[in-house]
Image 1 (cartoon, rainbow, N blue to C red):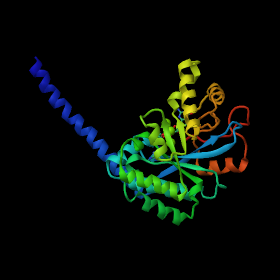
Image 2 (cartoon, rainbow, N blue to C red):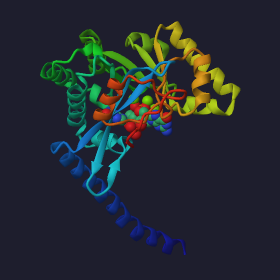
Image 3 (cartoon, rainbow, N blue to C red):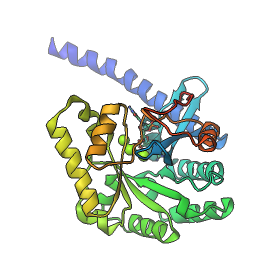
Image 4 (cartoon, rainbow, N blue to C red):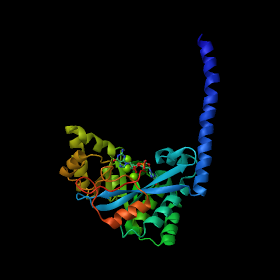
Length: 287
Ligand code: C2E
Ligand code: MG
Ligand code: MG
Ligand code: MG
């Protein structure tokens, strides 16, 4: 009986593997084409202060697949890394963001950069080319890196981050608290600010004293290291109020605005209307 099962499994398994591999290969081909045809676009999510005033935006990539619809970045950034397309994807993102945001009256713009992209020695060549091409001021821009970037002791990564800082770009540590970065690496890489991960913010809703203490500890740590701090994934008034009590006065999340198109974001900047509860709501396009 067990022999029978083993045989069945073997014949069952292989076509499935084939199918998964075929789907993946197809997606890879599609991504390559999407990059060549520039079928990707950027959306922008506002970051606000305690008064709902826009203090910056985060750029987020979107892939509108002709058949599969909108594919979330979590699904294809990794694919790009694994199939050798990350440099091309990264260059597209940075170029597009520079082009769309350089006239936003100096509103700071954060750009996500993958750990693998940062490890490439040619990374800064691309960035410098794009800076010149779009005539942007690096001081308007911030690169968001994740804690995994700080973990490894990679020379090219260190050089790239140091050069970004020299050029005038700021560095934010994304999803803070989910990884294992040491305090010394925060200082060594001269990180400018940390973004408290949504996972911590979410727990604030249940009046969970542990969640509150955790947030307090993160904010105190940021203050001790003289880092700016922003909370991501803020969805409710309760979360916003508790963060504010703990001393965090910069927020990003659906409570204030979903990510919107460059055009819509440009209009929000022009309107200068405060965002979030207690203020006039802004009509938002879905992302
Ligand atoms: P992230 O950098 O931490 O970006 C924040 C994510 O949280 C975004 O998802 C955003 O839409 C979502 N978000 C914002 N506010 C809320 C909220 O209040 N509630 C909830 N539930 N979610 C919220 P998105 O755009 O799907 O991006 C997911 C991740 O993909 C990003 O996480 C980032 O790691 C990566 N990513 C996105 N765009 C890029 C890019 O241009 N380059 C690279 N390398 N990675 C990117
Ligand atoms: Mg980010
Ligand atoms: Mg994040
Ligand atoms: Mg996150």
